[in-house]
Amino acid sequence: MTTARRPPTLEDVAAAAGVSRATASRVLAGTGYAAPVTRDRVTAAADRLGYVPNPAARALVRGSGVRLVVVVAGADATVLDDPYVDRVVGAAARVCAPYGLGVALHWLPTREPAGLRRLAEDRSVGGLVLVNTTEAMLAAIPRALRGRVASIGIGSALVPSFDVDNGGGTAATVRHLYATGRRRIAMVTGPHWLSCAGRSVGAYRQVMSDAGLPVRLVPGDFTARRGRAAADEVLARWPDTDAIVGISDATALGVIDRLRGAGVGVPGDVAVTGFDDIPLAAMTTPALTTATHPVAQIATAAATAALAGRPAPPVTVFPSRLVRRASG
Image (tube, rainbow, N blue to C red; front, top):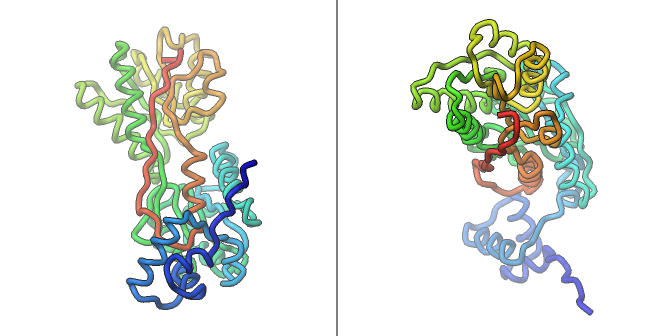
């Protein structure tokens, strides 16, 4: 019979590093002074043993909260209705569950980034995961929260960033459309204030420029509703369009719905691609050509970093790959 190996404890780390438990705790929690050589020995021992601090226990000792808050920036509270947010919260909950930590969802108006101060004053908050992060949000993070914040999006020297390679995924879909003979390719964009949307637009522009093709952009907001309206705009402005790149799968599905309603064949007349590879993308008619977006992996990494209490890589980018299906 195989006996499961118990997880390493703080005492194990202290013994391996040749320091007291209090010193090991101080180094791993990032509180108080320890000589650089001592910090190096403790962190090396923790890494070698695979020690994972218990966020709940540390939070209770430090009085730094017993719940993780997922903070989603948006112009209004409808941003919380995005299925993407549900996936982020679900992944964060799976990270927190083994430690008895709760997860809360909070809408932060884009015009009020200073609202983060209220969360800093709430002693039940153990850490934050920022979604749709802006420079203004990063600048507004109170000192009391530093070291307990991770971003899905842009980051800073003090806030680690986790995100998908939007540019790479978008470039792959546009190159695929070009390879299949499409030459008049339009794109439905995302909110201009989001860095991820900017990366996608930049990648689209680059591929079109390299191919000597005209750029055709219409504004979007990641929703199917706006995708429908954007399809109308594309058809009105450029009736010869033979492909439309959606900033998201929801956008692309809205585009397809409107095109089919107008008697435009997909992909016969106009090819359509998305971005995200949501479960529904493979079940639509036609099935949606898209690029992957590992939301669960990204959110898991961000939640883990927000609770870890020690430095994380400043920027972690997850790859996106093309998924060829029937729509384009």
